[in-house]
Length: 339
Image (cartoon, rainbow, N blue to C red; front, side, top):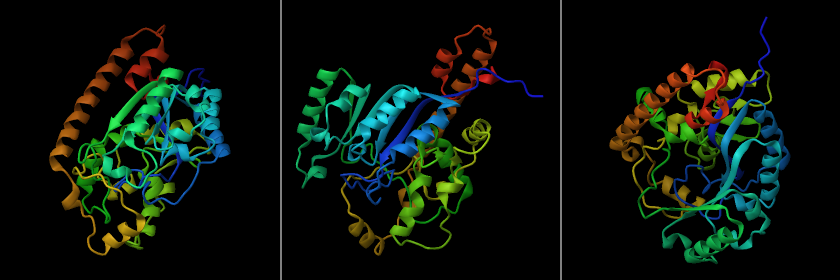
């Protein structure tokens, strides 16, 4: 007979949520496919249901609302309040390109702990009714008034923007596994979406991209179902632990460069322009994978794993009176019942 455990939760450093699938900008090779996604706003009721279920077996250091562009969701403040009421995360923040900051009600800034603003080369702001300097100014004014942490992510013409995916499957299983094992998104950019838990955005949007771009109609799988964990089925705790600890690449990884794509120039590309480009050139793995970056990422992943295993060994030697909550947060994902 199994004994009832009083303390059983998974702890993670970070989880993100896509408040909107689409974006004001159309950045080519956006890792979340925001440049080609059709407009879709997350539903508050679904978010509430999913987060309540996940909160029973998981707690995170920080929950970040992103997208797409999260400020396209007019109920974004309600989403943040729900997350606070559920007490799912220690800190809550938002990532935006800042273009809509001028139109946001100040209540948003009173609800967040931090704000990340992505800034792009000046050419990316053409035909928009705001300048990049204005975005920086507005963010700083709101930070001064509401005392949240503010960080700007500066994207230059090439660095650190990289190719994220290819248009035809990578028919090299060992290479796919290497890319997956070295991918920082698969380790850190987990999310929940319409009743499922995912390791990244790729499974959510890949099938739509392949269909919308009319690249190929063959062998397009339902990645949303295959590569995610259903939240509202029995034994979520054990199913999620198995998923998180698996080193087997997702099916969607067959189209993904992870974080090892070559550097590319950031530019705005409409869906029409993108479709036209497909008739001229299909993005292939041989052209877009940065082998030196892959090797560097593999080395970093190996070092991180060794550090994590060492921390696990230290934790197991500590007596039972330990403040598990605090220590486990310093390590990252941990099943506290294993200590």
